[in-house]
Length: 327
Image (cartoon, rainbow, N blue to C red):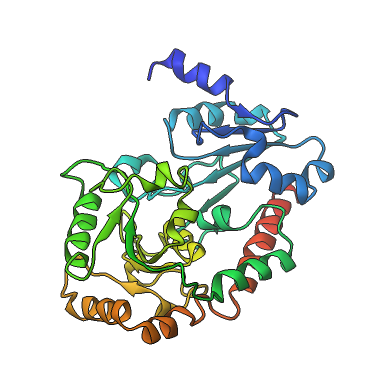
């Protein structure tokens, strides 16, 4: 990227309509007024409490040079609050510049991500929160969502075996290889419907469900939802989307311990791409062929009893961290 291009991108971020919230290296398809953090700041009263403040959010979907420009100019932009939000696996080589959650950059006031990091400028705030809980959620709203996720009742229409919806990153991509091996094992039990580009064998997601994955998955008993990497704390929306759709998750990631203070691991089927999965396949076959056993497994709580409290603390702690920057 040329210096001119970098400067143009720096001068033209995604900005909220009031001009007080900017996003750099963000998901470009989403208008700034619709970004989760914009609504959160509005609903929690930050724009009213701090009328001179200008909030700047960074993510890792672009050149870090935009942050370096900001850092050079930071000395006279004293009303700017700079927040980094990491929704990607920053331990992947492609995100090497962001591996420390930008805590090595003094211009960053608060860093948010999935890592467990002991730093006063850092707060753990994983991506799935943005996907599952609206930014204006009250404690009552959070309890209601957690109850819906945790306590599900089996419908008779959920009568198909298993689905996979995954993009095709190429035959040499490790994630595609893991998913392919998993499908190859599962089809020894029953057919697996692959509605994404990888191993595509059905058009129903698009033709019948208009690309509404949640509705598409309501007919399946199991869903293949591994992460692209297994790193402590790295839990994306994949597992929570699966639970939200009502499927039983076949999962790999987070070093086998995804969100231990949120999820009931007994309600998750763990796949080990580097180990012996015979016991898991036997368990899945038993659940598939024994309706009573499947119902018993299906209707156990998916979340821990106090999961709502943990999520509510994420919301409140983010407010306290941001308030603390002004104090």
